[in-house]
Length: 158
Image (cartoon, rainbow, N blue to C red):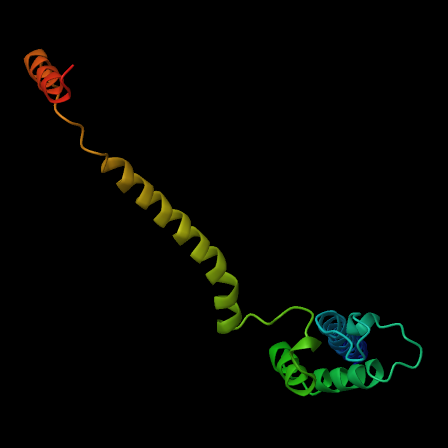
């Protein structure tokens, strides 16, 4: 009986340690997410600082925004959903960097792609121009040259 009682106490203590660890890991994870998401957004007051680092005394925007962020994290919403909600509410300038959507991906890829296509097209055009060199006249033989000189003399009367 005493062996089982000691076993139960140890099992109960182990369960308590595991429960405490699980609860604190969730809190640390929320804190890490809060820090990560707070650095991905800008304060809406117009100071140009990252939301989590806005240091204005009595800032009218950072406090409510941080509370809203904390509430959405505690509700279990995903990072993309939270960033989309903030972008919808405060506008696209609230994001420190644009989210990687199809349009943004296209906006980042197209300029270098067009530059490379332009360079390639120019190289092809120059190669074609070089291949299409001006036709050279056939070499004139000395009899022809003498005939041309005689004709020039007659026509100019020299």
